[in-house]
Structure formats: C-alpha cells, structure tokens
Image (cartoon, rainbow, N blue to C red):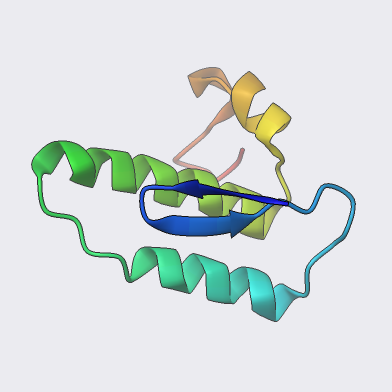
Amino acid sequence: NGFHRHGLFFNVLLFLPMEEETLQDIYKTFLAKKTGHPYKKLLYQRNSVMLGLMVFQGLDSGDLERLTAKDINLREGIV
C-alpha cells in the first residue's frame, strides 16, 4: 500500500517495522528536497519535524494528531 503526496511516494506499512537504516534513508531523502516558495518552506519545516518524530521517536500518525504545544519542552528537548 502507499500514497502519493507532493511528488513523493510513501509506503504505508501498518504493522511491519522498518529497519533503522531504511527509516534514516527516508528522512535524509526528505531533507534533501528543495523548497522554493516561502509557504512551501514552512510546510517543509513542519513536515521535517513530523517525519523526524516518527522516524527517531517512534510516534505514529495518531500520536502526532494528539500532540499539542504543551507536550513539547524545547529547553529540555523533551516530547
């Protein structure tokens, strides 16, 4: 299964874990994407953070949906 969004194809694997290297490759590929318009740059920054939380912290889309500003402590680096 998968879906196409903004020129990128993402595999949706609901119950199959991915290897750490694969997740890091996905993240690096996304970060290498160029943005032009300032609005797209803001979306890119937001999406980079969301993808990073999924790849490196193990959050899923439901976790991201429930996440609020109160859940984040930037000074201590805690989510």
